[in-house]
Amino acid sequence: TVGVLAVVGRPNVGKSTLVNRILGRRAAIVEDTPGVTRDRVTYEAEWSGTRFQLVDTGGWEADVEGIDSAIASQAQIAVQLADAVLLVVDGIVGLTASDERIVSMLRAAGKPVVVAVNKLDTQMLEYQAAEFWNLGLGEPYAISAMHGRGVGDLLDVALKKL
Ligand code: GDP
Ligand code: MG
Image (cartoon, rainbow, N blue to C red; front, side, top):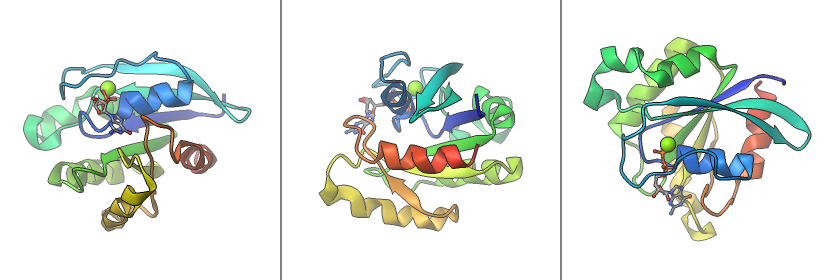
């Protein structure tokens, strides 16, 4: 495989839904309740002929758990082991303080990051991705993990970082 791509973000933003979309099967557990999972699960994935490892994480709620426990979290470990990071945020909720704290930790880790703005299920909602330019991580990619919108373009960009 070409490398390891870790999927991180707050609980309930759609990380596992995105992982399932990329894998093309329901391997990762999708939950309506935020913050239940604390796992880090690695899958073998393939996208347009490129094989890579895709790591789903349970979520990273820095302002609830505190920075110290966040540093010890599975998401933190996943980032340390990754070649690149897919940061998933919720385009309906918008940019939160928690997202910003996660970005601070990602900066400290020094890994390449691609921002996926999820839950933008229709073209009419795509403009909601724009506010995530404020994270300072380059272009935010509007996606709908649930419907598959924008996921191909996102992966084309993310796999180039591996
Ligand atoms: P995780 O905690 O980040 O892994 O989030 P999950 O993948 O478990 O999803 C949390 C909730 O968001 C579930 O109810 C999903 O069905 C929902 N969800 C995930 N992706 C999308 C999406 O693209 N659009 C919409 N409308 N809902 C989504
Ligand atoms: Mg999940």
